[in-house]
Length: 314
Image (cartoon, rainbow, N blue to C red; front, side, top):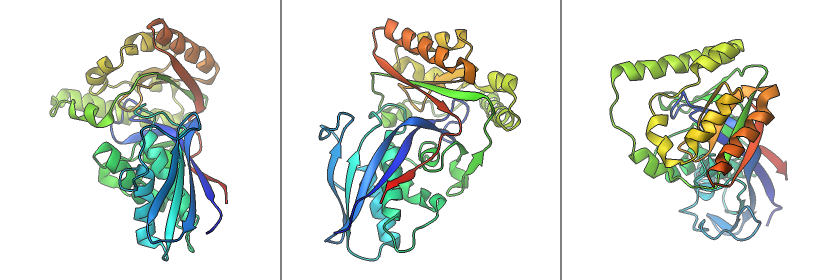
């Protein structure tokens, strides 16, 4: 029985408004931890799953076939392990069904922890396919917009057509991300099933133009162009009604100077990008608007260069 290795993987902002299923941003200040060690046996097992309060999680399973952490770990161990088993502990720091990449953070942290136990650890970016196996179980599809930024940090372009390759994008100077998490839940798989199956060419072209413009704006640190392009004209209108406080929170963020504001993933979390000097005021305004709707919430302010997964102890 070996000593535990502890890995941390941050929460993330999926889609970033303009890049449905293909753009993600890591979030500083929240994340999951997975502890791993070699064990007797020949499979990956989960000893325990603990929640935000440090107690045994009331919902998440320790069945290794039903947890994104163990699924990712098993995929990596099957491909590169050298025999024996792996035991995991999962410590959740990201709320479930929050739009903050909860399932992705567990999968990434597990892959990073188990990688540290290999005789020849892989490069970090080579862990993406294994973490995606865990995320695929949770979301029902191959979507890297939470896994990739949680693993690599920063702003990542990760369309399915390029996987397993992804592109770490330059981020604008002087811009922060603000995220609030209302005390609500939105099931990602159900939210996906509720989306329209077809869109007018004009609408699709508008969204592609906004994505291209946003990427160019980030590369050039063009604040005005970020404000012009950080909009979602396809997915946000379909999903916002699942989050009762959305309109009020977005209005408050924009009134305080946010460059743009939208759902994080399928919600209920809501993010905004803003100038660094405005971030705290934007976060406060978003919180106040949420609570005025009778919904408790918490918030984070994060640089757009927030790091990805790391080994904390070994």
